[in-house]
Image 1 (cartoon, rainbow, N blue to C red):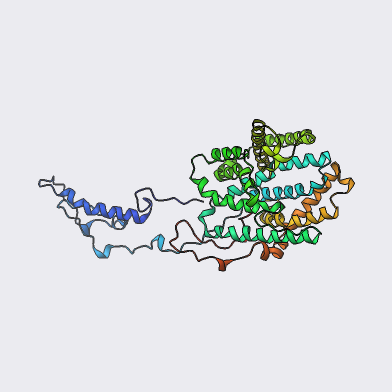
Image 2: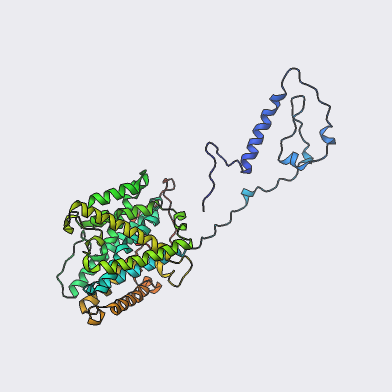
Length: 446
């Protein structure tokens, strides 16, 4: 995965044959000076060069022995072997394309299924079972999504192609979805409203992700970026932050994005041991039990990671405690999920590469279902109703992540705006054009 770089101060790798040849040649040119003293000790006369047996290594790779008279003997031309072709002259084989790891795709599909389920449960929140499931899901599903986005965006600014995706797969889809939802609401009999700076419903994530991506170089320059992000998150609770441009969510979920930036692949390997997965299962079971127990007694505002302490009608010290507790609970549940999701290829691994479509399109189906009352039937207010909604949400997520769905809506949600960008210059530092990939990886973690 990584290439060995030349040691500091060396122009070539010491193991490179070219470096060795140059080094030997320099040493050979300097050797005669070692025989320059006025009274050298005479050694027994060696056999003339023509009478010495032929040695391939002496004539091709090793410098000749210096003569005691201060001059190196010159080998005869007829004894020089045919020069062998240098390895670097052979055309390099094209690098093999690395197989895509299914682990993060598995994680993304599980998370997008939870997103669809959470939005579908809203009409039945009056039931204890629905509110408990909603509270459990919202405690960690978006923090985990943001964490994965941060991890996948660590090298975002090192590529022109990825920077272009700020427009192609975030800003353009944002405008398209805003207009689409305005038309849908108007078609369902609601008042016409279109405010581009105030994201509609689930569209907040695209704007927040743009802001997180833009701030990435700043976090990469800091010594303790995670500590700074947590402090900002806690202090932001004292301010009434507007929802315009998703600024409230930007600060509310900032620690999870920065955590993703500082994570490395070896950190995910820490979740592989069996005992860690057992502990993760216990954590998830405990989270479900706590959600069932506290659901009738708690306000749902803290789980949205956007409201100030004042808006939660609590004291400042209790508000800080709630924000801190939500941070710990979301982190614990996110880590538990990452430990439990399978790492091998599964039936939903390929679906996890197209979660952008499920994220942006499921709102249309859910909004219509809410307006028509399909999610408010009396029998849905109970445990069986929660299971039915979860099953339907899973089926919807599967359909919207199919390759056929991407083919149908790609022109709208992932337009190729090549004409909009300048061609990157060859000497642009740290920025290289990337070939188009089969799967997109910019906006929502897929």
